[in-house]
Each structure stands twice: as structure tokens, then as C-alpha cells.
Length: 230
Ligand SMILES: [Zn+2]
Image 1 (tube, rainbow, N blue to C red):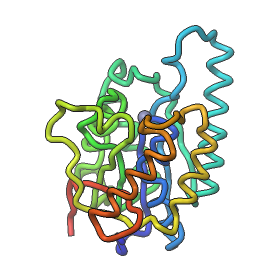
Image 2 (image 1 turned 45 degrees about the horizontal axis):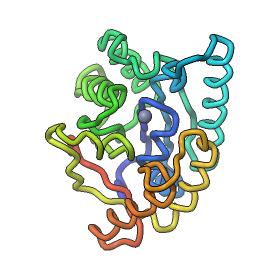
Image 3 (image 1 turned 90 degrees about the vertical axis):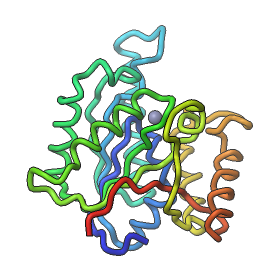
Image 4 (image 1 turned 60 degrees about the vertical axis):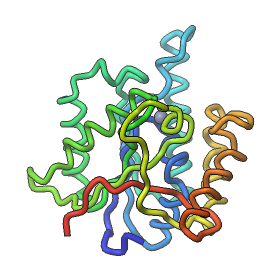
């Protein structure tokens, strides 16, 4: 299971994507002693309508607190937040997003980067993928040698016409860590929905079982390799 990596970065648009997409994997990597740092690009709250500035600030703080609690539960070393505008990442110059990601990579020096897949209904997820792909190119002195992407339930599978679509080639056995993924999602209760919504616990379990059935595990999370430099 990515045995060569000691320093790993998880880069997501919103606090909750890290659990929905790879919470079980993060827990397993942390169990193995990997140092995992998380970067969250958007504030996750300012796209909501009918809120004044004070209410927005309160929700953003609550979400960051939830993320830090999740980090503690899963074994993430540190969380960084860029506080970019939610569901409006396309309103920020891609160069600025990319440079912020580059600074994070320069600080933490991961060799494996995990981020969101490019074919996604959520615009912030797409921008995140694009910025990360640019930031990890092999220049500038940092040492990212592997980039993988995950599917984000309720947005990757709903990008029906997007190409090339999510085509996983790596599967992580999360049979022993899936309970921590479910436990983590309690901190993001406001983002969860009832079945059959993809962000319901039963749908996440169904996805875990489906990815497990593809790979010979009871429960798995799936990833698509973008590149690997050996
Ligand atoms: Zn998201």
C-alpha cells in the first residue's frame, strides 16, 4: 500500500471531501506511520444563501473545527485552510490557486499527493484537480513522485457527460478503517443526507462494498493514478 511514501499530502476543495473520498485510506496510511498533511482550498460555506457575514464566519469556524477533529481521529498531522470562496473557485485566478498549492507542497515536501478527480460535477473539485496537477509538475525543487485522484460521492458519479470519467486502477483495503470514516462523518453531519443520496452512510457503505468487490476486499476506496515517477 504505497509503501515507499512517508510524507503524503491530501488536497481537497472542501473540508469533508477528504473523508468522503479517502477517509479510510488516510486512517490506514496514518496507522502505518505516514505523515499526512491536509490542504483545504475553499471555505465550504459562503455559497449558502441568506446568511449575513457573521453567520458565515461562524459556520466557517465550525467547519474548520470539525476538520481538525476529523484530523485527530484519522491521524492527519496538520490541516491548512486557504479560505477561498466556496463554489466560486473559478473566480480566483488559477495561477493564485496553483501558487498557494505550490507553497503548501514546498513546506510539507510530500512524495505522494492525493486529490480529487478531474471529471466532476462540482466546479471547485475540478479547479482543485487542475491547480494540483499544475503545482506537482516536476520543477521547483519539490519531490512529488506520485499523484492519485479519488472519486467524491455526490459529485464525481453525477458528472454524467464528463470525460474521461473516473477509471480507478488502485484500490485500498479499508475493511479495518471504514468505521473511522463513518465516525469522522459525524463531524460533518450537516453535509450528510438520507438514503438513497450518495452522501448517506448506506450509500457510502454500498460504494465501499462495490469498490471492494472489484478488488477482493470487503470494503475498499478507489483511486486513479495520474502519474508515478520511479
Ligand atoms: Zn467538495
